[in-house]
Image (tube, rainbow, N blue to C red; front, side, top):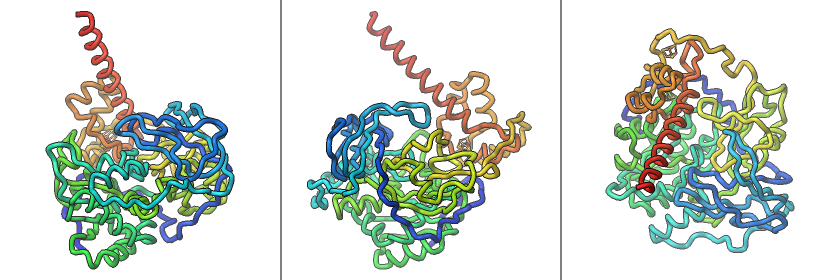
Length: 450
Ligand code: SF4
Ligand code: SF4
């Protein structure tokens, strides 16, 4: 084991609250039904391939990709399709969804079989068929990441075991429970990409996980386990690359620009499972925690399970939650309904008590500069916030690099005036995107008139 080579700039050190870290993962009994939104990736929504009344098996494709950044969606239970239609999700978007009533049989799709190809291009194509996306992030399709853009090459695989957000222990439990599977997944990624050098970055508050992976990789001279100083947001791709390799990803570019491929431990395990069993991504481990959850634990659930069903399995609520979040408290998304469902990228479900959320009223900026010190991207959060509130989002982007913001929430967390900083940055970015789209449409219309 080595220590990380660099300390990330900025960042904060929130109370970790990882009280589920020593609890074995529990498999949840099958829910009565699942609902699968056709968009669980950053690309365009999938096209449903089933209709009401169809019988489906576990692992059968129910949503076909429609662009390069989309991956197929598979049935996570066997049963009967009850409905196909739009449903409202957090963020105010209606997404076409497939609702399946489970028959309790879990009949497997007879076409499922281990992946036999070992040709790199064929292996990467098969990862697309698996439906795997980054299991803790925004849903970036893993197959797409495995091929560097033209003009760049990978020389290093960075395995993300940092898991720096409070409460979440989903990656930690994978490292403790399945270290050998992670190593098998790493070898498959090496075969697909030709990468030899592998660095596994784990924060130093996860000593047991570090031990397990050192032990599992002791015969592999190409794999190094690095202990990183605990600091949020070290699990961000750019921050992790800096911490383990000392390389800086240029603004607006991808990790491949510095020769690095980053995959999380759970994503790598899912790759191993796909190749060994042929089972696509239909279930995942979710940390269910928060002050009002009666029995916090890590639960393996079918993708598409209702949030309410997961909380009920964890003993329900001891009092009414002040907030329900999908993901962590720093970057997660608030949920308006327990009828929303677990997605492929859902690593945690939190039901928080009033004293776990910031309920202070926003007040004026006192120009203390703490947000600037905390920003891991070296941005000027207070300045960008003022510009966006003044209707000058485009200036915030053009002059103050708004689009480099990774929405980590460090500035909001540290601000003594409880300014809604990261919320304003999301709004400002949406405004910039809208302005760009309108400009492109206007240019296209002008071109047609000529
Ligand atoms: S931390 Fe808050 S109060 Fe301090 S400068 Fe930033 S926005 Fe202003
Ligand atoms: S949310 Fe954006 S501006 Fe705020 S600290 Fe994170 S990267 Fe910096």
